[in-house]
Image (cartoon, rainbow, N blue to C red; front, side, top):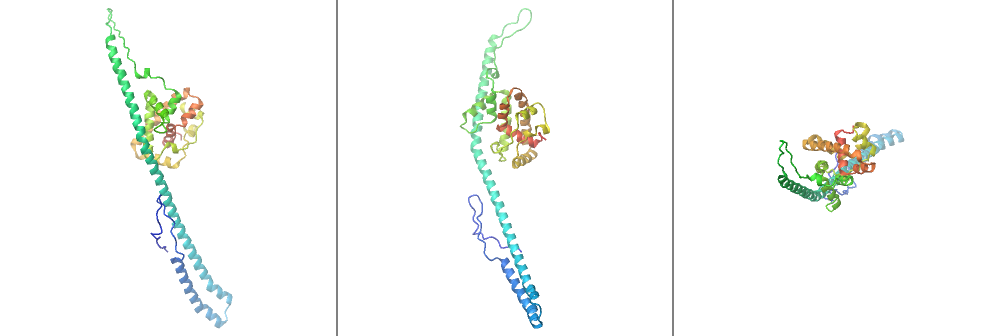
Amino acid sequence: MSGPQPDQESERPTSLGIYDRPQRPSVTSIEIAAGVLSVIWLVVSVLFLVMPDQTQGGGFIVTLLAVFLPVAMIWVAATAMRASRVMREESARLQTAIDAIRQAYVVQQQRAASSYEPTVSKKLDEIAAVTKKAEDALATFSSKRREPLQVAPPASGGQTSLALGTTAEEITPPLTTDTFIRALNFPETEKDTEGFTALRMALKDRKASKLVQASQDVLTLLSQEGIYMDDLRPDMARPEVWRQFAQGARGRSVAALGGIRDRSSLALTAARMKQDPIFRDAAHHFLRRFDNMIVEFEANASDAELTALGDTRTARAFMLLGRVAGTFD
């Protein structure tokens, strides 16, 4: 038996799209049906059970049970049906509330990302433009200085030349470990001058810039699914596990690196990996860059530096994508 539809005026959505609990009528069609059946049964019982027993002297207890036991069963069934309908309505309302809360959270995160990412992207473009100008200026300088310093070949037939051109990598100060780790975590906000300084220095380094750019690509793609590294709380692996991975260990021995436990993020990433070839290529490219980096980084890094590296946004993306790709299986 289907219950009546909820009163549309009594259900008004709140600010999150959650409906207030409607005022249910005290008497529903279930109680009305049960009352009608009870009256019918009582009339039938009086006509066919009570009156013949009075004339024939039948047993009073048997007659009482025969009259009221079916009535009791009717009301038990009616109560159970009403409770079942209430539970279904509450379950549907709860599911609607959960969906509304999740939708509101995703929209809020997307709005925050849309206001933050353009600023960061603009800063990165400015850094890349400055770096390109510096490299072009150095190339121009070296080409202008190289031509006047060419010397004539000696009489013996040999040929020598002097060139004082210097590449940008040779005059750029080496990237420190702390700066490299800070760059892999990316700036916290648009006002994080220390983060932008570290990122600018990392982009000037040939090896570090490749990993930073690959990391930025996958973080941007993951944000399109509502997955942000700040929301993940992975189980941190010990430094010796990172060293084993850097030295070539794979499988169960380094399974602790796959410390991401968020089922929603894992499921969304796995689905995107299967359906989107661009995302899949970017993820595998990033994993290769990270593998190459950790091999060189581990050789000179202390345990504290390995722990700090594992807490960066880039490392969390590696844990997530590595687990989805089966690196730690």
